[in-house]
Image (cartoon, rainbow, N blue to C red; front, side, top):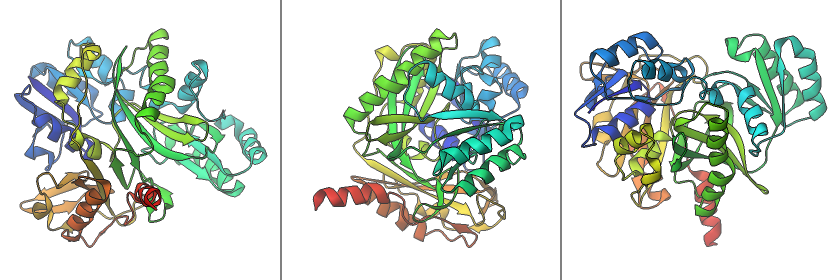
Length: 430
């Protein structure tokens, strides 16, 4: 089987690494891929948002399945275009991808189908004063979200009324481009945040891992929101009982609702959750695997990923199950100084070749380029260092020990990934 993965980041590196081990796959491509991904898949010089060129490559090369990594090509309709050409593709349609592409759509959908989520209202740019007055009346903390795709940076948890006003004005003044034409203002849920990933074939959903990530840039959950500075899996707060509740109250009603509305959902469904005193509530949906969550979930997966994706494409998940290795994973993102703001590209990174240790440490590249034998930083989030262990503490210790062997003057990372779970474990023992 010939498979094409779309994307070039750390998530796609993890997807390609996992798929490369499948006995089903004879040839694995990645568009556009990267120098690091080239170690496990053949790069294709086509951008992830170049829909027509991706379709042309898939058709001319006899691709048997396309796996779409990032959200943008899904929102742009890559799945629809490939299916129209007769190419099997794992990923939701353009209509179904609105679950991530529009927060207004997602909130209204949840309301229509009784899916628990935060109280909310939406406002357009021509309603600026009304939006500001609403936020003022609700008080702080309050959450302000740009409606469209904003690379994980369009959500502001405003701790003060002044911060809420600033977030609303930033969105309406064009900070996020067209994504900020509308904003969602919602209550700030109280609880513990976690993520559940489901594999969906339009009618059946299988849980394919849980994780908790760290969005803030700096230690102690301080600083601006980012695309994610680290993650660990499994998420302790999502035990078997809570996973089944999330599947029953959020995931399955979503699949049923999408099918009822004529937009059946097939692909990864990423539920961002807040586990409150009254139960799980949906913060947001993403229509692809998380990044860096993918880098901690897939190293724990025992079942052949390619078999699962083919099963999802062919509507056969009801006949399948998922098995896991009995281990924990924790990843630490190393980012360029200045991220998520302005950062400098090009710094040399040394030591990457020596820190990969089978069954202990893996390095997934998100934003690097290679010049001969030398690796350079070429993005904001640059590498994910994933430690594996019998428990979370061992996984964390292995990840941070590996980072000590990496020499990169222009990078930074958080030193406290996993703190919440480790603190809970310490408290339960005392």
